[in-house]
Image (cartoon, rainbow, N blue to C red; front, side, top):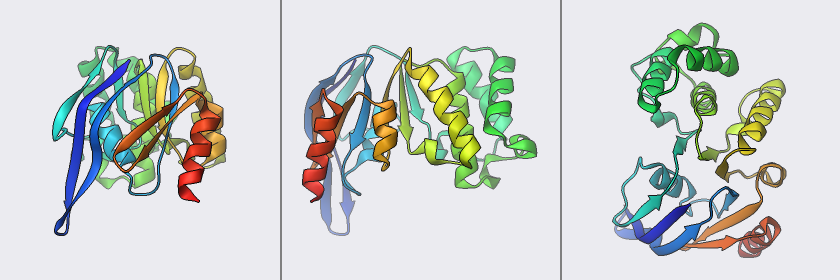
Length: 217
């Protein structure tokens, strides 16, 4: 369960205040895989960071009864001066999982080679995404936050990412952002649409997609 209580968030853009979340009150059910839809600039990544706890709200709060991952395609999740391996060790200690097991999983999954032992600041955006995605897949969460990460890498890596993610979805929920509707249909069963600071929940994914497409028309 994720519950938004009187949640608001805005930013200054030039001399104007842009509202991203406008006094949101909504409860998302447990165990659903939710497609997060919205036009470019609607605030999807901002909302994901707020759910993850990496960005504060202007007012209100987010309440959850489970463990939520960081946004797995968000490179800012890891310390840039530490190596990939050092970041993974830190995550293992924070979340109380076996350090060696997580290191072995991420080293094999992310396919970073020698870069795994180099500072994250030297990584490309794709390499950071592979590191954060691999680490999150190695830690058991109740809800995974996924932002376009299955599009990272070559075809073989994308297939591997999809296989691992589908396995995790057997026992967890997710909030997923993707511009590829086939991916959303593969991974998600419900949808939420962010539009003008309001979040609309749809039990049926196709209804969410139809509503989003009507807004974009």
